[in-house]
Image (cartoon, rainbow, N blue to C red; front, side, top):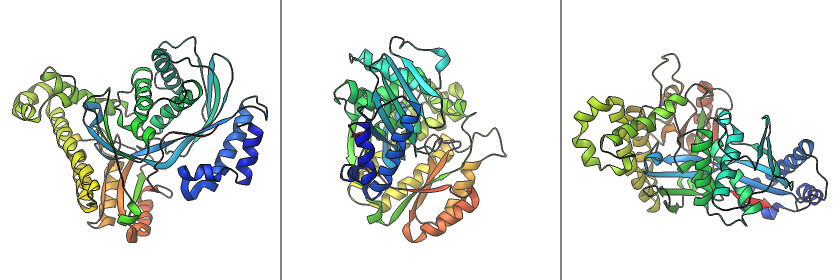
Length: 427
């Protein structure tokens, strides 16, 4: 749609019908936000009212089960949420991609230079270059474009702001240059490649897949090239629960080593059996070898492997509970997942700094406020970031007030599941 027409339609409500399937009752707010995005694009990039302008949206995600299982080719359960990263895009007819995110520097990538750039590791340009490189390897002819993005996905929150950005960039390129042919799995795999190879973070595929597919997704990564995916219907309002994410406001800046140690130690256990990941090692073999594994790999690695096996099976039980409508059993399994992450995976605290155990403090506060109802657990990668809680609706106001008394005003976010994944909104 031409930029001038787009701004008028967003201002007068002409696109609400198109936005409603994605944003539901928040469509009007979304239209105002998208209009602001389009105006900010024009402040950053030279453009005319006649320029063909595209709008995209990619949601963040919440992990519902499978804490640190996907990178071992296990199972995962996650849902996309009603917080998203949006982009205003105009093709520029050049061989350069320029992406400006609000409050961040411009990411500029020349398509004639898609080899790995060591100095970019850990940066947004690395993700953009990685996506472009992978799509080029797959035989797609990528061109240049300008994009401006903003996000409501909380950074460092376990809601996968980085995965949302990767999948958003891939969705843009897919629709501009690949005919929109990539499946959610294809989008996710390209995003994972960019994060693993170019960004330098050894993540699994669950985050990207949840952002790409939308709704609640149960995934089995035994075959990473062709993961088995199943959509699972969840209606939290009908069940009488709210999904809360509570932010610790702690920094992830010095935690890269802690995150990387989890797949590293699980990999060391797998290597004992001549394998790459735990998904290739039967639990019976692991269990029989525990004495030797303790001597070779250390106790923490053994405990983390034990968490993997039990969490992997727990995801399947969670899926089955949701499919038969047994939300009470699902919540019991959520509590078990949180206990396993705390005791065995050990990603609630890094144990180096006894004065800073923010996740543990929030879990203690949540359990006190829930008084045995609902469920809470560490959320996402752990160590900092957020906790997740399923709160009975009658308790929600008191829970939110109580958590914010501990964590600070604005720390407790009430989210909903978004059924639409990464999507082209307007073209």
